[in-house]
Length: 35
Image (cartoon, rainbow, N blue to C red):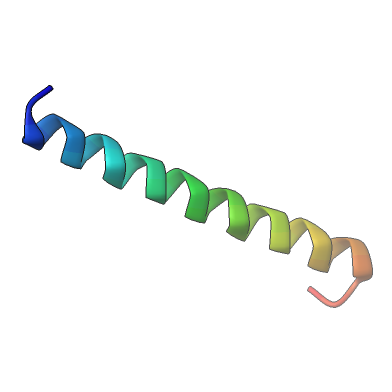
C-alpha cells in the first residue's frame, strides 16, 4: 500500500470518527432538550 493511499484512508477514518462523535453528542443533546 502506498503512503499516499494510507494517508487518505487514515484521514477519512479520523473524519468519520469525528463525524460520529458530533452526531452522537447532537443526538444526546436533542434527547435531553438542551440542544
